[in-house]
Length: 142
Length: 142
Length: 142
Length: 142
Image 1 (cartoon, each protein chain N blue to C red):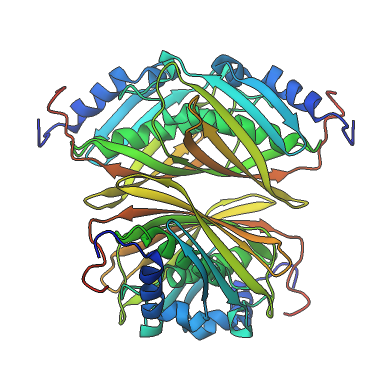
Image 2: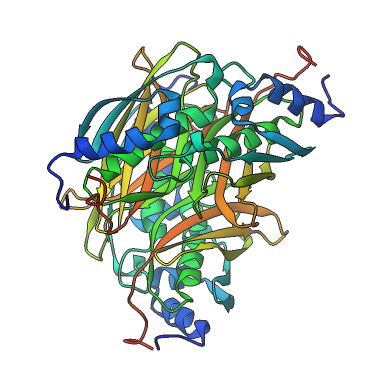
């Protein structure tokens, strides 16, 4: 599958094999080339000592969105770095939606912006991540 | 406890109440004012679809270190933003050590650098986080 | 002027006194609360050794936009940190437009996204900056 | 010059051709592979509207250090992104020293940490930048 006509297949394969995303309970809402939307329900075990969401959970949701969106082109891409800004607290029982969009694509690297909203459409985190695009494709697994 | 003489007590209280850090199995190796060292063993459930550590786990370890180190002064501090750079892949069975150090402290904000090493002393991630320092202390719980 | 009805006045005062923005030749295209648009023509002295724009110039344009946009509320705000991603090279003779928008506003801090475009509407840099909002206003100068 | 034995030559060539670094008056104090130290005297034209150093100048100094340090290996490297944290104000008449160190080096990308100090050895800014390493060397110019 050198030139995938179906980015959905790539992301489904990634999510199926992604043990931590599965433990979190991340759901795939939509996939297009360069764009994915994910959903996550916040449970008690995801909280920190101040009874709000641990930063690592919000980051993980965005990081999965980064990985999925950046691999939809059919070339394996790996994260180099990411910045997250927290804009509102998240509590147990909240449902988060993460929308990943492609902000820049070059042959070697790409930048994605992931915005996380709660169920009231309030932005709770902003995430900007950079990936390195390898020359490896998905023909060995798909 | 307005002027804590024992930052260890604050961090122990934070960790005891931090459900996600406990689920991960984060261990507290040492605490000083402005500085903590944490340890984490990587298990299978922490991996992503490429059989390497999910970025969210490395971030969570560093983020706990940021939270703990920034609260050792006895004033509640909350994360504003953080940048993580991945420098080497991490695998199941690896043991990570995160060292948090204070890079800047002002009355209102502070910056911490967290470096994560694997069991071979190789740097696997660099993390720089900024916190806002509230005026709330720990006298209600300690 | 504790509650400015005219954010334009604040930004005009800032720009008039900002020696480096004036040296660069930054022009103010529009101001609203939380939002500004700036323009800059790239000249030879702004290039680096590879004959493309020095990163410091693109950053300075975005940083001025950050400063101006974050002070439109009438409270003096100072930059804490900023991330810039370069997405396309810039050359002498290009005209850059920087658009700053407010991505998050709390009582103590705020986050702004600045996007820089060239004259062909191509994004050349993405900038995300965080400010600390002091309690000082502009009543001493305006 | 495919395998340079003299990183100093590369940096001197870069600085000689870097018009903005020359306008600033950046001085090269030392060069090693992966490491450079630069100096800059702050003058009035570098200030913003609050009579402190414009963020773009501190960033430009660090960005030149990033460019120089990352090209000492003899392969042309270009900046992808950078984060700067401001830790103390800088005034006209201050002399800044920027020290760039290599925090990670892979075949395709590298990370550098640049710390800027004033003449009192106080840290005034922290900068972390990522470069993409091209396959082009300096044999056409050196």
